[in-house]
Length: 208
Image (tube, rainbow, N blue to C red):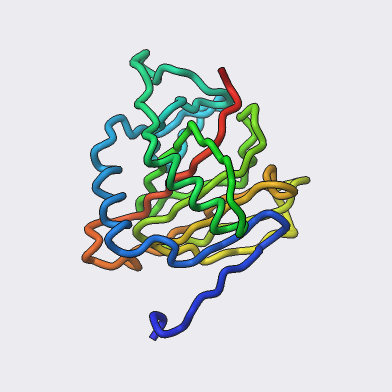
């Protein structure tokens, strides 16, 4: 029944736009296969000793709390950021904001969530640029909590992100706190061939 109910494009906050079903099924399946080919998924260790529950691989620049590097944790070069992914990001920003853009992302963080993984409320503020963040969802749905720019608490909005959805946040909302309090296991189309959730976030580093 859900497939019969259209989910409209929604501006969650100024500059924060949710575009449901942005990627068709074939595009989702191709992206899932591409994500499988990127090697080096790891759980990030935080300065306080905690370990993130998501597994991440980085393209273009390697993220480690709380900076970027051209080398990974073991000293090997970070994976290249492919030009086609930049094209996808530009199209996402243009479709979310309804205008053409010169958006030039050079970072991708690819996060894999198993059934127990979650992401605490945080800001994406390690970049030198405040160009928008583009988020693409694949696989299981999740509750995406999009908050305010002042703190991790209320007010916030819980958004149902499903496979193929686009979420872009920039402008006034670029430094909003956001997180994933839970995923919804078993909600992905079995034909996608993915157990769990993949999230691809594109960013502009502003770094040399």
